[in-house]
Image (cartoon, rainbow, N blue to C red; front, side):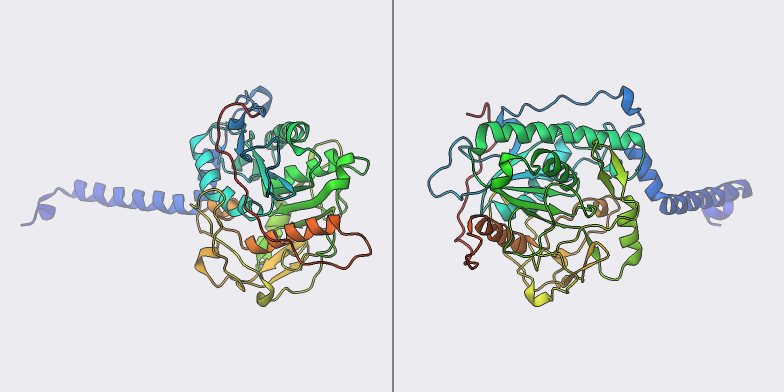
Length: 394
């Protein structure tokens, strides 16, 4: 007689019930996994009584994720343009509404994934200044609660302080391109509207703005959508969605918040979103064929400033109803990851790496070109040395 046969009936009943309970719990976890993960990311502390982490000191190099080796002087041979870069969300949440700038996980994701993929295109054509800031957590992008909106507005204050510190100490009258990705794109859009208005002296040397994976309403102040690649002082703004995925497109627009003139966040409420095709360099509904795509890159893990190999002709791109619809890239390394949290961050690759690099060069040349002159060829690329974190910045 086997051991199972020797067990009393009540033990067999208990084992069956336990197995059923485990199965039910596993099924519930699968069905409600997003709700469970969302709950785990909720800080639960009302923002009115929340104590934010210490503020970064932008006079010190530790407060910058990227900084030129000699930020106060342009070395011989360096490009003639600066980029002020605001990084995407790298902190998920749980304890804080706004991330400490020294959070190990957020810092690792920033330095190993986001900077190589999204700041990388500009390190060959500009000096890059990328501040660390007390970013709003990923959780704040999953809810429309007032607490979440307050955290996102709080993050802007750090970005504005960093931008003003950069202008006061290091810009020196150089042309400037603003770049922001996802959360960073939204913060940069507000910076563009408030700090570089029509009467600002800085506007004369504004190359433009790249607002990547950013949903913005038409008619925002600061800079118009680019109508051609031979135009400066305009914005290239887009948010990608898989072509034909109407449900994902609807969710993307429904979740989007935009700034009011008073600095609050409100839904788009049916307003049309800006979409500038990064392959074509202009706001248009024309299809950019895969043959026009200059190249994507997966630069994850590369050292700062290392140039990845480009993968051209990977996908088509077309602005449809305010979003950039892209086809499935040929290379698996340029396809979205499947994790629930990972799908809500900026992708760990840059589908338009080479296109954005070329666009930045073209906008700089357009800034300096006399109005009557014909477009010229883009300038040769030059490398830029970025300084590691250290002590006080000279």
